[in-house]
Image (cartoon, rainbow, N blue to C red; front, side, top):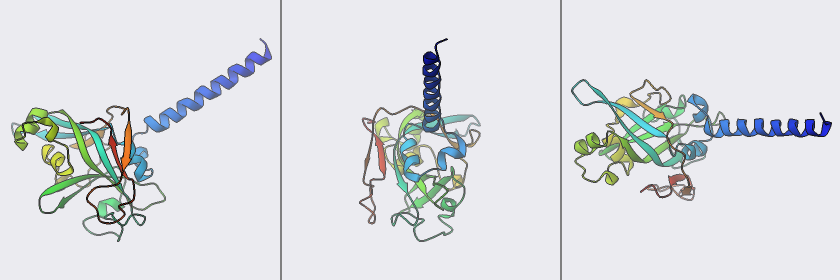
Length: 219
């Protein structure tokens, strides 16, 4: 065989192998590796993933309540005055300082719960991603009945709404979201066509950071 062809084949194989590894890294990360990255990267890449709640309606039969994550916000540590972790660890935010890939659920304004995912790179000691909105996919009728909502578009389009619809509360704080056997976990979903970033909502500090991510056309 011509040596020129040999070199071309070799270079082509190297390019294909490199492309495979890049694709695997960006799309195929699983378990703790997915969450052991920059909080901002995880917030962006959580879009399109599916949040799943295994729920007992009272009959003893377990059903799946789920939705595609369509809006997130990243919250850091010492680099982010708007983060719960900015002033150090407390009883309330201790999950943010532990292992990545855990549910961080807190009660706010005495009204509703907020669902977060712990995520940060090894160079940072804390961080979490707030899940702000879902596109409901499974158990929709059950969620609508429990929340007394007639329009499914108003079912999970807010951090308090989605925790109510999926019955997420403080009892789920600290659960592993990478464990498919967990009552609350995250699965692969879809690949969004287009994602945008904006400033975060409802904060008084670090409002200049574009750490809110959402799928365009998710409504």
